[in-house]
Figure 1: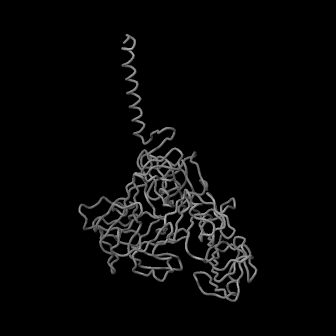
Figure 2: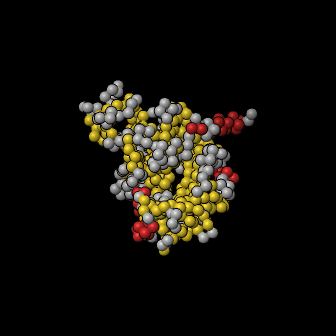
Figure 3: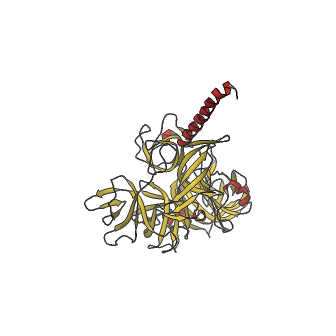
Length: 484
């Protein structure tokens, strides 16, 4: 060994150790490098849109080494379903489109007995919470609020997002009392806290936590999850809590996070606001997708992405998910005419879809559709229902695609032209006749004269019928109480 080697080798090993320490430090802030792909610790809260792995917020999460929790109990990946709002912890790759999940946690927004069904407002009431149903709500065990098998007293599990009115349901499942993961639980924001009486309210429900030991540290405005062993007292409407947990936000300090939900507490773009229990802040350099800063206000559904600092998600990107203009009020249901990796055509309407589009199979052939290979699993001739909206560029954007075993033909959308006994929807000529059943707002039975006196261009109308070379022959036609 030369003299120079004996001097420089210690320096060489010092540099190696320094590099190792620096690499460890980089790993400590949630980032690492594997080959050319940079990964970062990530926490995402959003709706499961499909499988093939698990897709949440447009990201495909690999689930090879993932623990699953369902309503506080260890579960299986096979129990996860499209429409569930979940929290995914893990890492996300530099492409922003893929990652690895270490844990997936589903906790129902509400689970308990139905106390009211309102077909006029398309809502249910569960544990004092108003549950709104929209075009993307998925039902299991029932077809919808008008299903005669769904009655007051039935237990349902509700997943969804909070807005000022209550819960906007992404998924509702009719449950059997005593079934796996069946429980009584409710989430919400504490109000009317009475520390002396050990009570507070969630919506119209009063919660009594006097039997808990020790008492949790609670305050008005806090997001909590309450569990109970029995339904509320029918006379007092008081729910006796057996457990209260302060809701975890969708993120971890210093890490990447994505959160989906409705904006609340918005004053202006310079102030923090809330999305699904997470404080969010936008900046002049925040990038907007499918919208703009001017769209931000209470009640608008968004997805925010960024890094959490001091408990606040500093949004580098905001995707405007739903305004009135992007509400999924367009429906077509019939056989698939064409399909590829990015679009599907039904009744001559070409819809664009993506990893954010909810995809579900109700035929039993393949309950969990593989989004990454959808054009091979859904084929020409399959019967599907597609929901979506028309964007500012005039493109039809699919928010949900469901393959089912029906044979019916359905079209819903804004009326473009009227000339009794016909009208035009999505460019399709809809013909009514003596055998057509007419309905006006809130499902009221009508006749042709009253229907055509009431219907106006821009109104949302739903048609069930038969397909012909000239359009749709209507067997039932109904005004859906909305305008475009």
